[in-house]
Length: 345
Image 1 (cartoon, helix red, strand yellow):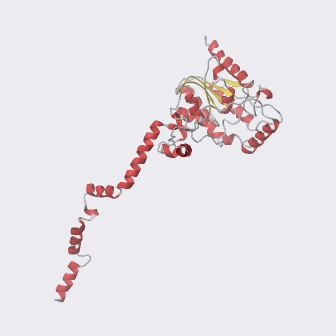
Image 2 (cartoon, one colour):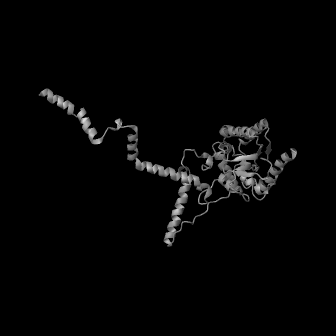
């Protein structure tokens, strides 16, 4: 009897096969023994709510990215690259004058005899140009002119993070532009609520975002110039060529790209304010020498106007004013470019 009892205990105990059969009978086969298909169905069923949320987010993100309100709607902030496209009917090809805000302020496209697309970008650098070309965001045709000033080559210079070439392919549109989307959504809710308080449904009122680039009128006071110089001295003027290596490499890349694509490339060393009260950064001379050496080795023409403009042509230390400096610069660049066309005839 004892043996039978022991055997019975062994067979019917917590680990016994009969217990396993009873448990299987209550809940079916254990997950580990189910076929892959039913197991996956169970996983999907248990996580259906989370999966539906994820699918909804991905669908909303895809629709928003297709619409691209950051470019197409005036409700949203616009970077300088988008402004360039906007003012050229969204055409993504043509001859280009690339640079930073110094180019924006100096080159008057509407006054040029043979105008280039003014692609001056706020805090634009050579690394930006490399990414634009490498990612196929713009096709430069016939002519690429690159303006280089005291700040175009600084690796550590913070640029506009919303430029499209900074968006990783895997990053959701909603996340990449989250700050500006939030700002515009809050404005939408605020205006709608104000409409409700007036007894109406207002879904259309908004403040159109600025679509023009910053231009530079008049001349800053000596106090303003000194404040600018002090700021540059603290942020940038201590730098050396070692702090520009990424952009020096980008210059080499652009030169190689232009040669490969048989694209005429020219460089302009942009004007700097010659007022002796505000000395040019120490790195500017070796940077110029490096650029000139690179250009000479590659057979790239250079227009050096960095020291040829009087102080009264400037708005500040690096931007020509719109009244006097920019028209003179545009005429000079226009004549320089025209000289190449004349010599080829």
